[in-house]
Length: 134
Image (tube, rainbow, N blue to C red; front, side):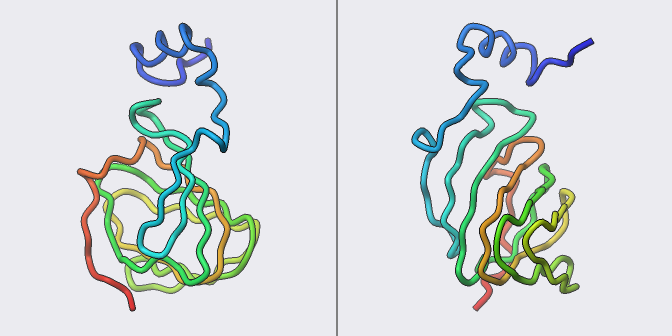
C-alpha cells in the first residue's frame, strides 16, 4: 500500500496538479534571514508533512531558536561549520547530516551549503527566538 504524500486534501490537489510533484529552482522563493540565503522550494501550503529549503551562508545562522513542532533535518552539501545544539558544539562537514528534533535550541556557524527538510512543514507560528548570535 502506498501512503499518500500529504494529507487527504493535499493528495487530491496533487492528483489534479501533478506538476506539484516536482519543484524547480526557478519557482523557489528566495529570502535572506539571519545571515542565511534560502531558496524555499515548498512549504506547509504545498504539503503539510514536509518542506524543502536550500541554504547558503558564509558565517552561519545568527539566531538561536527553537521550533516547537518541526524536526529540522540538514544535509551538508559543501563546507564546514559548527552546530550548537542545546549548548553542545558539533563540528560538521560535507556529507554530514544534522537532525534537530522539535523543542530543541540550536544555531550554526560556518561556511555552508546545505539542504534542509522540515517535518512537518515549517510554520513561523511555532518558532521561538532564543537569542541573537554575534
